[in-house]
Length: 221
Image 1 (cartoon, rainbow, N blue to C red):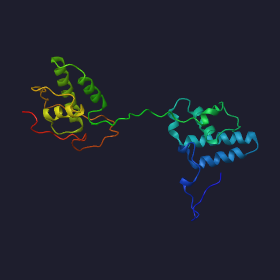
Image 2: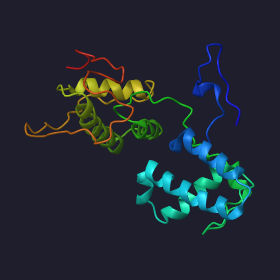
Image 3: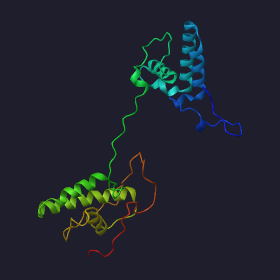
Image 4: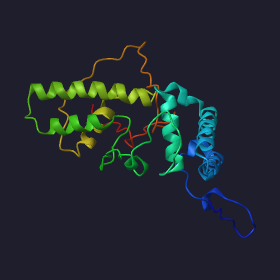
């Protein structure tokens, strides 16, 4: 493989060929290329077994996988590309696997309006907007507000008033849903502890009112 150098004679990975298996590094790629250049098949096969052992040492977490030895040989074939002729304990991967790209995960087009409540809350609010007014709808709104208060306190340790939750419901509904007057939420036990989930990807620790909703004081009396 021909390597590219800049004007100062220094090698940079950004100027090199992209690695098929970056977790093994460029030195393993060089070993594989030297192994492929060996004309004797028996020697080439012995070198392939040695490279697989090196790959196992460099990527020890692969041992936690089922049939990890088979996976290492598949990785060797992927690094070497098509045309690798060695005595392998496993068949070579299909040619289509050399060019298969990961299936992209479907992403939501619409941004979550308030991350500390989540997208499901928005769906529930949209559903409530279509329901007829009455006692059933009022109780559903009250139950939703209690749950939203709990979610709010997970990410914002300060106390939160009923009015703030009611204002958030109406804002998330784009004011299509109006919280009936006179709704009161049950009191929170002083010993209640609303803990954050163990995985906090996409959220920041600490802070207040992360969803962009300010407390609307004095809205209701």
